[in-house]
Image 1: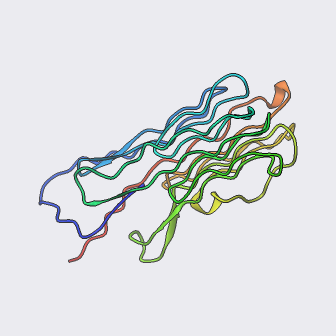
Image 2: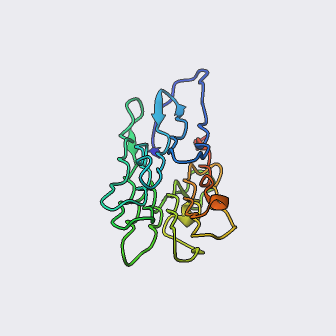
Length: 215
């Protein structure tokens, strides 16, 4: 996420590209597509991996750790903008210290939550509030929750308010949820442990560019 205020933008035509959220695939964490506007790039979010197969991936906010003991979450790559005078926000994904339970993806407001023996799966990092779109705060760029091999499906987690998806648990048939569109939010992780439930996690939500101006 990038936030810039009190900017002077020259009159002209500008190309703005809204990045798509990553499409979830088995075992490999994909990175969301970048969003670009006014010469600056907001990095797409990182993806998680799978137990003993693929590691998490860095992104604007990093993907949560795969469910492997000692696995770190993906690093955050979002820096400050180079053209606008503003601030970039991105946090790393949560780690895992227990097999079969993934860490949460990072959010624009905080780190992804670690998966450990007291939290079978990590919640997504919190998003960040911004009021430019409506004049009232909207929370953007929440991280997706990790998946878990055991335990039960959660109904809420730390990244949910920012649009982060809910992870799945064990053999439940209900799949993880996608990140909310136009919030740049992460999808939930898959925690299936049978062939029928070893399916991709939730897709990431596409980004947004909000322009608020005085007249």
